[in-house]
Amino acid sequence: MSDVLQQLDAVLESRKNSSDATQSYVASLHSKGLNKILEKVGEEATETILAAKDAQSSGENGDLIGETADLWFHSLVMLSHLGADSQDVVRELGRRFGLSGLEEKAARSK
Ligand SMILES: N=c1c2ncn([C@@H]3O[C@H](COP(=O)(O)OP(=O)(O)OP(=O)(O)O)[C@@H](O)[C@H]3O)c2ncn1[C@@H]1O[C@H](COP(=O)(O)O)[C@@H](O)[C@H]1O
Image (cartoon, rainbow, N blue to C red; front, side):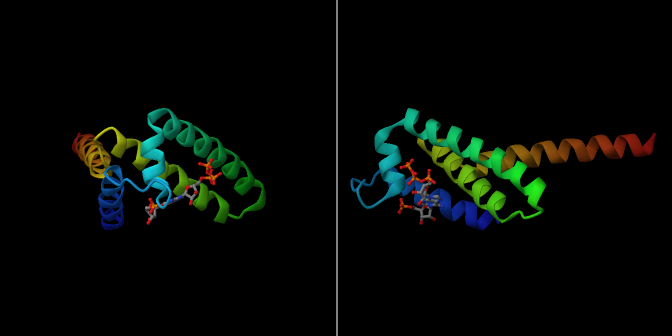
């Protein structure tokens, strides 16, 4: 999983220097700028929320998974545009997971 994210990070980074925004969706987002990227993140977040409500009533998660992938993808483009990447977020989650693990251990030993 982390491998896929790292490979995607590398592709997103390479698109920042690509001059061919007509061939590459990511290059076109970078060339349109941060506001366009944030607009896409907002749209995908709304679509993910609607898909979650639909999933609750239908019991089917297919669309929800697709919309969440769109949200993650556009969030990664946002991070890349600003000089961060998926591994920065993975490290932060790991740090929090480590902290909560320590808290649980401390609570158990009381
Ligand atoms: N994972 C994705 C990915 N997920 C979604 N999308 C695109 O994100 C867009 C989703 O936006 P919408 O559903 O709102 O579609 P839309 O209405 O056509 O979009 P807008 O006109 O509103 O911008 C679509 O154009 C999808 O093709 C993606 N485009 C690219 N990737 C990855 O990025 C890599 C580089 O892509 P290129 O830069 O296009 O080569 C690819 O190899 C993929 O791995």
